[in-house]
Structures are given as C-alpha cells and as structure tokens.
Length: 80
Image: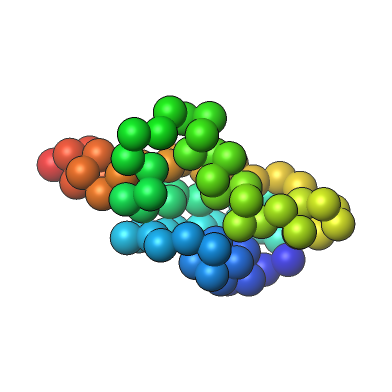
C-alpha cells in the first residue's frame, strides 16, 4: 500500500488540519493534526484514526502504522 492511499483514507474519514504520512510500503508513520482530538486522551485519539482505516486493517492490507496525534493548538505550540 502506498502512503498516499493511506492518507486519502484518513482524510476521507476525518477532518485534518494537517496530515503527514511516510512509509516504505509496509511500515508507515503519520502525524495527524485535527480539532477532533480536543478533549480526547491518547488512546481515544488513536482509536479515532484507526476508525478511518478499519477496513484496510481488517483485510490485512495495512498492518504497521504508528502515528502522533495532536490538536491544532498542540501542533502550533510544538512548532514554536
């Protein structure tokens, strides 16, 4: 699976202020910035992203994804 495909699945399933995704075809890393994460803990945020990829995970098309989830405010604060 190509990183751009995964990016499109995430974007289709949730509103992202910023989304960066990289990978080698088997292992992927993502930075997901969304206002939808406000008030959610780390696990809830991960679950929200996984919801957008549920079908691909269930079929085994996607199996190794790590990501960082931030609200726009958190992302802005990290960038200085």
